[in-house]
Image (cartoon, rainbow over all chains, first blue to last red):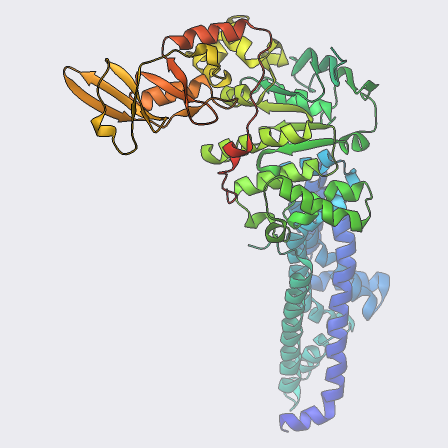
Length: 215
Length: 383
C-alpha cells in the first residue's frame, strides 16, 4: 500500500483527529489559564501562599500522564472528560509560576507611582501590574500549550480525542501495512499542531504586548 | 501670617517589629506657595515623613491637616488624586506612551477625552518637551532627564495644589540635574505650588528651598529656616556637622549683588579697537572701550598687562558666587558689574564679600532670587 492509498482511506479520520487535538489542547490551555492566572493573582503578594501554589501545581506535573489518565478513568470515564481534565491540571504549573513571577517582578517604584496617583488596588492590578507582567504570563501559557500538545497524545490510552489515536492504532497493529503510516501520520500531525500553536502565540504576543515593554 | 497650608502635628510612624520609631512626633508646617526642603542623611526618615502626607505610609499616630481639613483618615486614593508625586526617574508606566502616562490622573478623575488631549500637550510644553515629538514615545525611548520631565508633567496634569518630590533629580548626571533644577524653579514661579521636596543633597536644598528642614534620626527636625540663616547660624552641632566645612561658601550663591556693595576703581576710556594704546593710571584700572567695560589694565613690576573680562550684569540673578567666580577665573582684582545699558556700575572687591554675607544673614527679608528666562534659555531639551 502506498501512502496516498492509505490517505484515501484514512485521511478524513486524520483530519478529524487533527481538529480534535487542536481543540482539546486549546480548551485545556484556556481553562488552565483562567484557573492558573486567577490563582497567581490571588497569591503573588504572599510569599508562603505563592510557594504553596507553585509546589502544588508542580506536584501535579510529576504524576505520569499515563497514570493520571487511568486514575481519572474511574471518575470520569473514557474519551474527552479525563483527557481534558488531566491536560488542564498539567497546564497549571507553568501558568501559575509565570503569573506569580511576572507579577512579583513588576518594579516597585512603578507600583508606588500608580498608588501615589490615586489608583485603587484593583485598578493598579488591572491597568499597571498585569499589563507589565503580561509578557511573562503569556510565555507561561505558551509553554503550557506546547507541553499539552504531546501529552494529549497519550490520552489515546483512554480513547481520548486527537492524533494519539492514530499513533496508538499504529502501535497496536505492528506488522500490518498501515501501522507505520498511522504512527507517522499521528506524529506528523502533532508536530503541525505544535507549529500552528507557536505561530498563533507569536501573533498573540505581537498584538497584546505593549511595544513599550519589548526589548 | 496666613495659616499654613500643610500641617503635620505630632506625626509618628513606627514600623512593626522595630522598636525605634522611624518618625517621632514630628511637627511641621508648610505655607502655601513655598518650597520646603527636607534634607538629612540617608535613613533619617525624611522620605517616610513625606510619604505620610499622601498616605503612601500610614501614620501610627498624629494628624495631617491640609488646607484646614484633617485628612488623616480620609480616603487615601481620593486624597492622592489631589497631590502630585514625583520620584526618581519619574516612575513612569513602561507599557504606556508618554501621553497616556501624563493623562493617568486625568483619566482617574474622569475627564472627557476631548479635554485630556490638549491638557497633555499643555503639560508637555510646560516641562519643555515638544508634544508632537514626545507624546507618542514610550518611556524606554527617553533619556533619564526626559523621563523626569514627563514625571513632573504627569504630577502637574490635574493642577494639584500640593506636590511631593522624592529625590527627583537624583538619578541624572550633574549637568542635567542643574538644568532640571533651574527649569523647575522657573516653573514654580509660574505655577506657585506648595511643594515638599526630599533630598540628601545640601546644595540642592540650598538652591531650591524657600525654607529647609534639616532632619536627623527619627525625622527629628534639627533646624527649620531659610537657607541663608541656617548656613550663617547653625542651631546645633548636628546641623553644623551636616553643613560641613565651608558651609558659608554655599550662602554666596544666594545673595544678590546690590549697588551698595560696589566700590569705584579708576577707569580709562579708549576708542574702539585701541585697547593697546591705553595709558596706565594706577596699579589696576578698568578699561572702557566705547563706554563699555572690557577688562583690566594692571601694572606689575613695570609691565603692563591687559586682562579681558566679561562683565556681570547687575540684577536679581547675579550673586556673590558669580562675582567670586569671575575674580578667580580671570585672576582679576575685583569683579566688574554693569547696568542694564552695559555701562560700568561699579566693582565688587574681594573684601566686600564677607561683609555682604554677614549682612544678608542677619536681615529678615532674605528671599530667593528668581531665575529669569535668559538664564534658562540655553537649556538643551535633549537632556
